[in-house]
Length: 109
Figure 1 (cartoon, rainbow, N blue to C red):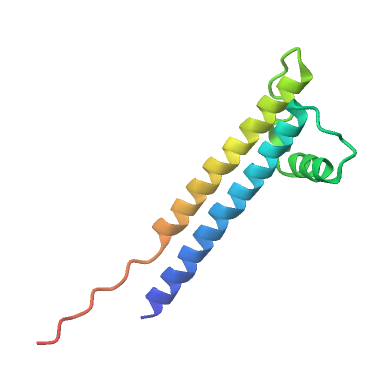
Figure 2 (figure 1 turned 90 degrees about the vertical axis):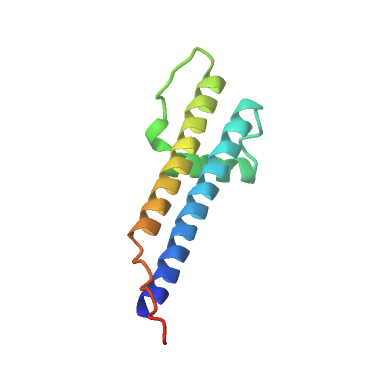
């Protein structure tokens, strides 16, 4: 019985990890679109997305450096978003895999 509760909690944690990583990726993609379409950098939503890009996508900043800076930022931010989705999925699957298997119930005769 206790393993059933643990399994539910770990399943919930796996879902939270997957959703959190997807939200981070979505905001980074929105930032990439703002850069690509030259959104007003003084806008609050644009600033919010840029802050998230700087906080959660720093590892791909200036990874690729094409001649057009808009394209460079779009590619680098898009790559960061893909990495967040992949890592979130892998961590979520790892959590589920580490969940203890439910014990088989004995049939009463």
